[in-house]
Image 1 (cartoon, rainbow, N blue to C red):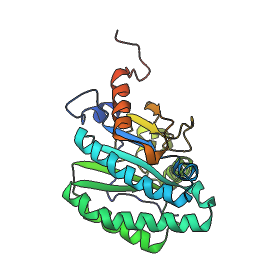
Image 2: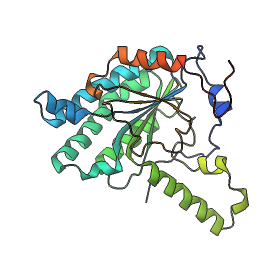
Image 3: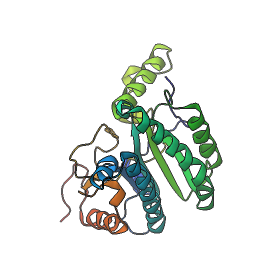
Image 4: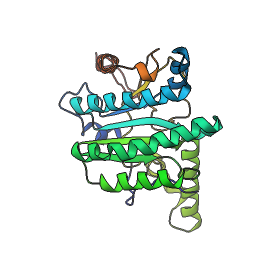
Length: 260
């Protein structure tokens, strides 16, 4: 299988290197990950077709991206489409792929104007060729942008990510390029789709569900989690600010003791 991978492999940043990239306020997260849940249910509650929820959700993406720029957040990862989502009706899948392609084309000038780098994580297998082509164009065009990294999880599943990492390590051991005794957390992290970006500091989930849904299982080991009952299309700037404020009031100990 094929998955999105940058050209140069490097060790995943540790907690120490992640925090060295922190904005001016130490209370702000460097990396925010969001499970954008509730698009279809929100639309149905409004008496609208499910696809309208996805369309409104795309508007929320733009608002959150602008909020991240204002706060100088360095990384934003959005759970756009899981590998389990292929179970949805064909007409909804066709709409989602078309919406994704439209977003990539329309927002490419914004990526360049705002110096936003686009990253995609997940497997390429099964995605339409025209969508893959637009992904590749945006990734290549924005590769040198350094203001903010927008990471879209598309055809993504954390378990399949770990499986891909294990297969890659096993192939290197079989070929004699790696000794099994040298495998540690850094080695495994360096094989993950996200190996060139720090782990999320804050995980936001909308629509009130209290589960992770196979998203960044390795990377969120020490992430702070904030959940709102609001569905993604109604997630507002005020909600984003509330999540940041609660994050700032938490003390991250990474398994250690409180300093107070």
